[in-house]
Image 1 (tube, rainbow, N blue to C red):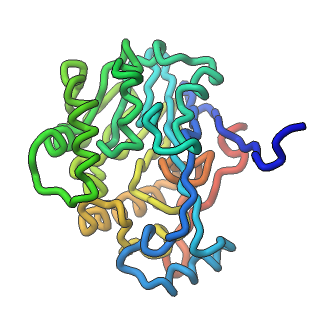
Image 2: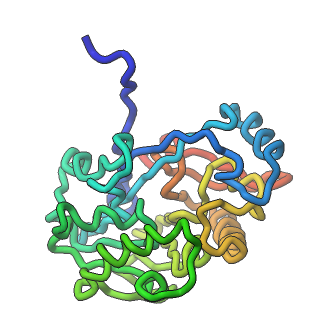
Image 3: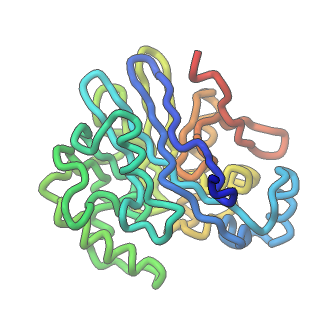
Length: 293
């Protein structure tokens, strides 16, 4: 008999965008019991509890998803932020490499790896057993981000392990890196966007194929309900909270005005949806079948 305590859940989602094929993979999740202050350090517990109740969420519990994206273009296979890999801190994450095989791709097919920023859930899987996971891929990262984590700028104590991981994993791969600035064209149809704040050189991305558009917001939005309820609220993992608020406002307004679908790394799987402006603020509208017809 199957283990009745183990719940099956979707872990791969694919759809087309013009000539591109988009694949989201659930690298895993963490269950936490600190919705406040984890999701918003400058809000009160009662404010966050109110948002949770409005969304029928079990305050103070939350599920924090990790959802990397692959984009197959006519000439490339691009892996964005390929998750924790074997360095996942628990059994509920680090599923990327196993699930990648289920998609029909393999690490050897990947031509480009794009790192939106240097936090562990985005860089750890660049290596497996001390060898490059994607042995044929060019690694693309913001120059600002690389210089920050490879240097000795002051960082909070809780980020010391992040710097150590970056220096152990990313710096040895520097000869395979392409360092870019915001607004750089990465491949045809894919442009880097300035999303600085969550980390020093954090990037988002604009994707376009055959007139169809998509925005990838990376970690600009941390929680689908709380982060959009008040764009002034600061995520506890933002390295520069004030800059992150400024970035969040800019990119959320852009997404709303363009009415394009959004992918964001920590949104509930499959992590595709829209941002809608309400009377008071904004809200996440999950995609249903729009991307499949």
